[in-house]
Length: 427
Image (cartoon, rainbow, N blue to C red):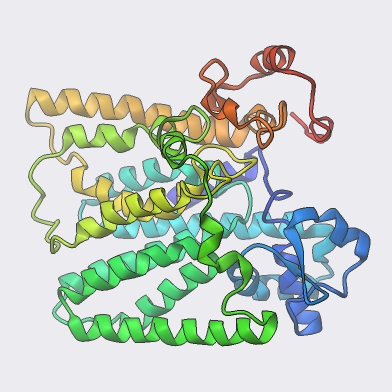
C-alpha cells in the first residue's frame, strides 16, 4: 500500500525535473545499445547543443557529463522501450518517469524492510511513509531519474544487508554488500563515503565477510578504473574525480545553508529529523547493534555534509530543498529508527510525540504538497535565476517551500525582471 501511494503521488504530481541534469542519461543507454559506446558522437549536433553543459568534449568525442551508473543500469528498460518504437531523443521524459516510479516504489519497500528489523509493522510503515513523503526522497527522487535515485537505493540495500548480517551468526551477504556499495558509487560518487563506515561496521561482527565484501568492491573499482583509462585516458571520469567537490569560497556559509537556509536547509525542510529525538529513550531490545552503527547513522551524514559544502555550487542549481543531502538519507533513517517512539507511557513522551507529529505534517507538506504539486517551487529558481543570485538562498522573506503565485509576482517586482527561461515554464 505504501508503494501504491508513492506511485500515485508521482503519477499525479505537477513538478518535473526531467529536463534538468538527468536529461541525456537515457540517451547514453541507447547509445550503448545501438553503437556499443557511451560516446554520443552519432547524435544530431543540434540535439547535443541543446543538451548544453550536460555534454562535454574529451579527445574530440562528446560525452554525457553526469555519472554513468544510472545510464548503464537503465539499459534493459531502454532496450524494452526501443523494442516498441520509443526513441530516447523524443521520449526520454516518459521513460525517465516510469523508472522514477519503479525506483521510488523499491525505495519505500526497502525503508519498510529496514524499519521492520527494529519496529512492529504499524510503526515500521509509519516511519517508512514519513521518511519518504517528508524528505527529499519525494521532492527530489520523485521528480526525475536523478543520479541520486539509484545511488540512494543501493546505499539503503547495502545498509539493510549489513545490519541483517550483523545480527546473524554468519554473514551470507558479503558479495551483495560489495556489489551494492560499488553500484551506489557508480551512480553517485559521493556514495564512496558510505563504504568505509559500512565495512567497518560489518568488520566488528564478521571480519572475514567484511574483508570479502571489500575485495568485491575493490575488484569492481579496479574494473571501472581500467575502463576509464581506456575510454578517457585518465584514472576516473571527470565527474568522479575528488577535485570536483572542492573550491568553495566560504565553507561555513555552505554548511549553514545546507542545514538552515529557507531554500536548501535539511533541518528547515525536514524538522522531524530533530523532533524525533525528543522521543528518544534507552535503545529498545530490538536495536542490538554494535556501537559502530553510529558511523552509519551520524558520522557518514556529517562527513557527507562537509564534503558537499566544499563544492562551489553547493546549492545544486535548480533544485528544491536539500537535494545533495538525499544520498545520506539511509543513514539518517537508521538514526531516526533509533529514536522512534514505540510507547507513550509518560506525559513527557506524549508531548514529544505531539511535537513530532506537528513537524512530520509540516515536512510532508513541504516535500510532497509543495515539492510535487506546486509549480512555483520550481519557478522560484528561475526568477531571478538562482545561480546568478545565490544570496536569495538565505532570503526568509520568500522561502522556496512557501512559494505561491502571489508571492512569486511580488518577488519578481521586488527583485528584478524575469529570466530568459521562465516563459517556458508551466504552472
